[in-house]
Amino acid sequence: MTRTLGRLRRLVAVGVRTHLLHLSRSGVDLVVALFSPLVYATLAVYLFRAGGHPDRLLQAAVGAGLMGVWSSVLFGSGGAIQDQRWLGTLESLVIAPTRLFLVVLPITFATSLVGMYSMFATIAWGALLFGVPLTPASPALFAPALIVCVVALGMLGMFLASTFVLLRNANALANALDYPVWMLSGMLVSTTALPGWTHAVTWILPTSWAARAVQAATGGGAVALPAAMALGLGAAYMLLAFGGLKWVEKRARQAGTLALA
Image (cartoon, rainbow, N blue to C red; front, top):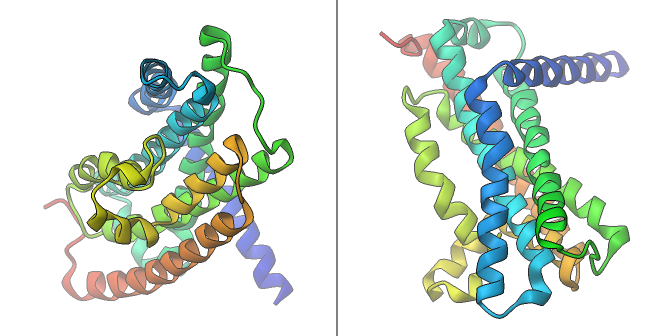
């Protein structure tokens, strides 16, 4: 058992490191990761100021950072699978002795770690350029809430990656999911401003609870409950991803449809 856990830790560590290095070589990924959070933060600060909420500028910067983290996870998960397909290595990953679930897991968490830059960049950008005060309501809980957010988004990214394996144009689905999910999660705009029928959707999204935990640590409120809900729902999506990837492996071996042609 100890030996198996040791192999698992090494696999995840090497996978995260390898994919981080891969992302650092991509010009498109670097430009998006470096500059889109700053655009989000600038728009958020101006919107909150124009709306008469100058006291919530830190929440605006944090919300913009959450949007950046989600975009990184979403496009990173989809892009990673697409890259493996284009490089001709996806079939090798599927037929390898190591479970596909364990191969994809480091990819999703690597993209979550890259997304953490968005959070720190938006907060620093807001403080330096707009004078946003760095005074979260619960300083001791802010960092743990961010960690929960990264883990929860990584778990959801794992579920999405399990569907992207079978999609030859995964980036198209990623484009369609970017805006709706951060809106339904209340990352920047409160979900109370959305139509009533959308509230049921927000309850099943770990991103929604993760955003509530971070925003509560920033502006005040209970952090433990939304953090626990985010991790619980994320774990449920991980189980779905595990089952989905097992089915994908079986289907791929039978149909041989993973290649581009």
